[in-house]
Image (cartoon, rainbow, N blue to C red; front, side):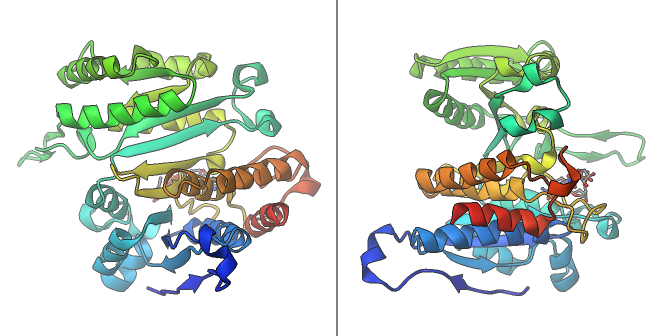
Amino acid sequence: PPRSTLSSSSAASDVYKRQTNKQVLILPGDGIGPEVCNEAEKVLNCVNSSHNLGISIEKSGVGGVAYEEFGKPLPVVTLKAAKVADGIFFGAVGGPEWDNLDYNLRPERALLGLRSELDLFANLRPAILSKYLCDSSSLKTEKVEDLDLLIIRELTGGIYFGEPRGTSDSGDSAFNTMIYSKKEIERIGRVAFETAQKRNKTLCSVDKANVLEVSVLWREVITDISKDYPDVELSHMLVDNAAMQLVKDPKQFDVVVTGNLFGDILSDIAAMLTGSIGMLPSASLNSKNKGMYEPVHGSAPDISGKGLANPIAAILSVAMMLKYSFDLNEVSSSIENSIQGVLSEGYRTYDLEGALEKKLSTSEMGNKIVEKLK
Ligand code: NAD
């Protein structure tokens, strides 16, 4: 894949203290992945030089483009670079041209491979509705105004990875296994409690304990570790009710923790509350806070190459990387504030409601945000 090293680090000695010497690996992928990654990279380069962060950026191939070049969606060279990097920035993978490939060769396998190889077990998906975008939400303004919830999804276990899995010899049936160990539940639970401590100190754990043994264990372990976080108010909710409550009264939630399958579905529901999937960032962390950051959306082949992709989810993912992996809270906030500033002036991408004369293409939106940052 094309590899470039763009070090924006300054040689000046008076900036030495700010330099982080962090390495960021960008994996643009397919469809709109490269388009939104370009804008994220512009923003990263901007704060890198204005705050003298000394971050170096590398790029590598992943997904369908990597399959075309290497015959695999996650080439060895990419995995190696991901292991070395301090932060990984992922665009999106997939597309109709690869839909009929063998399961293990499909672009989406790269994501699962990176998550499990790097042990990125904690997926943080904030759903925050900008006050300037209430009109874009699928719910009434009073239901979603000031919405700020965080779904923490277990990402490396549960039914997506459980064995045995397969199709019977006759092909008449197929099966998957939903399995969690106490250890897996405890580590995601602790991330959730610690995150809740830094926010509103409430945590809702979502399961299906009325039907599934794995959920009974989930509830027991979460309840057990709650004793170590007496300042956090814990509640439990069944997943079907949680889906309903998310559309009925989403503001009742602050931090939600759940397993892989339920988290996948609930976080997409939460996505719609914020107006567009093009607004939602995510972080997947391991126990050392190394993270892979990515917009929640996919490669959107229907709009790819047309300048219609909203780059804000990707740019917010850069802000998350600076906050969660590099501890650069104020730089992260400056990016979030610039986005709010641009939205407050009425500028929108085509997925968001707004006046036609203020509609911006993918790169125009990236440029506007960079302008605000400067
Ligand atoms: P998608 O998220 O790509 O698109 C869903 C809808 O949202 C489309 O109408 C698309 O145009 C729109 N959309 C998505 N991102 C947008 C953005 N930034 N700005 C404006 N509109 C946006 O989901 P899909 O259509 O189900 O999947 C398309 C491909 O992406 C498939 O191959 C799928 O496997 C893959 N996928 C990849 C990831 C990932 O890489 N993390 C996630 C989901 C889907």
